[in-house]
Length: 191
Image (cartoon, rainbow, N blue to C red):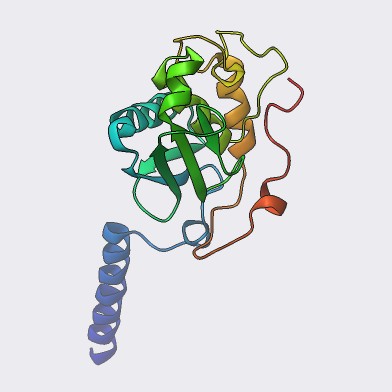
């Protein structure tokens, strides 16, 4: 009789543990690994973007609505956006295909360029996302082509190039890192 009681108690304990695992979910080796298909996050800080700050947020949303392998998220520790009076172009990005760096916008050059300010902002984020200028500069269908245009929507080829560029990329690591060797050639080079 003692054995039967012990057996039932042990069986009840095992069933209880299994029920708890079923409710909570058992950890698996796969769940402990980072997902390769998860979107990479690039943080941007528009605190120094002055009057262009709303356009910076709008540009991030434009890219986020068109791509799934990378996300632009307002925060610190990534891309710093700065607006100044004068510079060498309407905007410049310190890197192509990176998660840390600086985008500079220049008020006077944006006005003189004839391009829509939102297009300029989307264009510079395109560099951060891995895109270079295509050979057909001035093509208003491509935000990376510059030009005296208002179109701020990346075309299908630009969106696909960003998707390819970030697909399977390693997740960024904390702290300073030289990403040039990790990210290699820009996505639209020669397109």
